Structure formats: C-alpha cells, structure tokens
Length: 491
Image 1: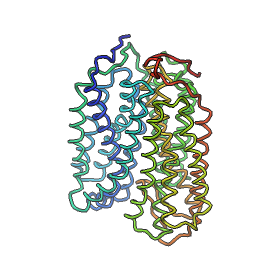
Image 2 (image 1 turned 45 degrees about the vertical axis):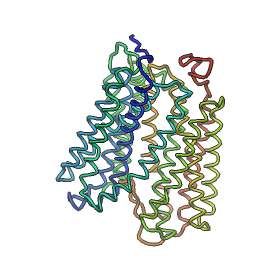
Image 3 (image 1 turned 180 degrees about the horizontal axis):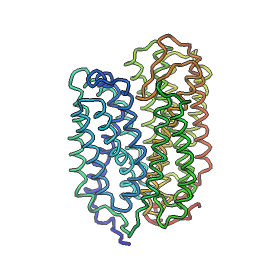
Image 4 (image 1 turned 90 degrees about the horizontal axis):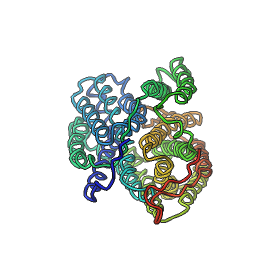
C-alpha cells in the first residue's frame, strides 16, 4: 500500500480544492431544483407530457443508485480521476438535455446527468475528509449546508426567470462554464491530495447487486404515485418485493467476498449505522416539509404558488444558520452531540405544536415556526458527516461517505412517498414525481394537514432516538492528539 502524504498540499492548493469541489456539488444540487419551474415549458416544447415527471425522476433514480459506487471508486482509483469522471458525465448529460428535441432524449439526458450527479454529491465530502482532520471539518460542513440552502432557494427562482425570459436550454448550457471552472480550480491541486493507494479486486457482483436493489426500490417509489400505475400495481409491488428480496443476498455476498464492495466492518460500525439511519429519517422529514409547506400555504392560506415557494426561505435559512453554528461548535466542543440532539428535540416539539395548532396560526407565526424547525434539523447535518468520517479508517472514508450520501438520497425519496401517502389518506390530493404537489383544486381545511406535520414530528423523533444512542467518539485532530491518532471503534 502506498500512502501519499498530505504535506504536499499547500494552503493555496487546499483553498482551490475546496472551492472547486463545492462548486461541483453546487452544480449538481442546483440541477435538482432549477428544472422544476421549467417543466411546463419542456412539456410544451417536447410533447409526450404523460412522461414529463420522469424529467425529475430519471435524475434521482440514477444519482441515488450510483452514489455508493463513487465512494468505492474514489478509494481505489483516487479522488482526482473519479471526480473528473463525474464532472465529465454530468456535462455530457447536460449537453444531451440542451440538444433534446423529444421527451425521450430529455429523459435520457437527465438520467446521464444523474450518473454524474451521484458522484458530485458524494465526492466533495470525501475530498474534504482527506484535507482536514475531523475536528476541523465541521466548519466546511457548514459551508456545504450554505451551498445546499443557496441551491434550494436560487434554483426555482433562476429556473423560473430563464423559463420566462430566455430559452429553456440555457438551464443546461449553464452547467458547462460552472464545470469548466470547477475543473480549472481542482485538476492540478488534486494531484497532490493525500490518499492511500492499494492493490484491489473490484467487487463487480456486489456493485451490481447493490445498484439493482437500489434501482428497483427507486423505480417503485417513482411509479407508485403515478396514475397509470399506483401503489397496488403488480409492477410496483414486484419492484418493491425484488428490492427487499435482494437485501439478504447482498448481506450474504458482502460477508463472503474477499474484498466486498462495501466493507462489512463499515456497515457494522455503530457510529456509521446509527448516524446514517438517523440522517435518513431527518432527510425524509425534510423533503416532506419542503413539498407540503407550499401546498398548505396555497390551499389553506390562499397564497400564490410563487409566494408559497418563497415562504420556504425561513425554513432554509434556519437550516443554513444552524448548520454553520454546529460546524463551528465542533471545533471546540467535547460533547458535540448535545447541540444536534437539542435541535432535533426542539424540531419535534415545534412540529407537534404546529400539527396541534395548524388551523389557528397566521402567516407570520407559521413562518417563525418554520424557521425554528429548519434550525432544529440543520444542527444535525454537519455533525453526521464528521462523525461518520471520524469513525472509520482513513482508507474507508470514501466508502463511508458514499453510504451516508446514499442514505440521505434514499431518505429523501422514501420520505416523499411516505408523507405523500399520509397526505392522500388525510384528504389531500397529491401528485408526486416532479417534487411538486398539485391540490384538488379547492380550498382545503387546514386540519387536513395536521397528520402530515404530526408524521414529520414522529420521523424526527426517531432520528433523535437513533442519534442519541450513537457513540460519541473523540474527534481525531483535537489539540494534543494529532490528526491521525486512532481511537477505539465501535463494532
């Protein structure tokens, strides 16, 4: 095994790498939200509107399925070639979308974009894990939260502006200069990035099994809400059964493979297991809030669609501010779990209060509660990333970070399906697929939304419980310990 040392990375290199990888992640995050406002324009331009929801679903399907692949590839082949490959695939997908003259080509281009986007979601955290010891990563994790918040807010606004005043292809051509700048910032500096090179046998069967199970589950979640299929469709049920049936096969294979695609030790690690499942729940509640809050404001408070989308700003702002506070707190705090646990507890109580008083709140009170909920959840996001990377051997950081990114993406997809089902059972007509929701066309009673917010409270309560029992290991790199002093890892 060859260990490439970090002392070859200068402060200037470090800054260029950080800016470049965050820009690459921003590009992928922006593409998740910028397309939604252009959906009607794309349907009018390309036809075949019955397949229009797949413009969004195809991206999420391939991005979620490939996220764990990139973590393994980065550990085996190095960070630079893997990141460059992800950027190149994403750019190719963007060009296909921009040149599309039919819905089939648009969906194909979005699927290719997702193949690259899965890497752009996972790799920046892995690269940051190489650059800094765990105690210093929290601050950058806060910057990642800012990037996500900015993309979540700027995407719909920018997409709507382009759809209204420019040609829709600009939303895809825009990725080319961003990608070029990201490559320019990182290409040379990444050559000096520390990583451990080792002989390997790539577990192709394990990769195929994991991707197949993920695709089956994602297809079930994508097809279930669609009118032509439905949750009781044999196709949807068959896909869900196939995904569940593959789980024991995957576990059996990972136990016997000489070099498993995902090391069993990583999956058995209690910090990794509990942290990733906890953030899985938080992301499930987060996506539910982002979908149903605008719907509530339109149907129960009479806001326009544009105003309802802007009303999510306090929620995103609370998340960003809290993530930055938590990231900086980790630099000095010995008990770094306390702040996220307090935030999750506050989010649970606030969501429960919102569900109980849903019909009596005015808009200002509702916005204040959204800010508190977003802040409560936001305290957790940077801490989970650092905890996972801190709990595994440096050579497994890419795989562990890939597992975390995968669970975040899967939580978003599954959470959307669960909360949508609760909303439908409560009398809210919901159509899921393009991460937007359409109401029944009439003013609904606010109380119909109470079960939705109560469900989100229960999901966050589960996240709190999982995070509470997660071991709190000392962070490597604390003063006096050095950046690579090992500590006992929970099995």
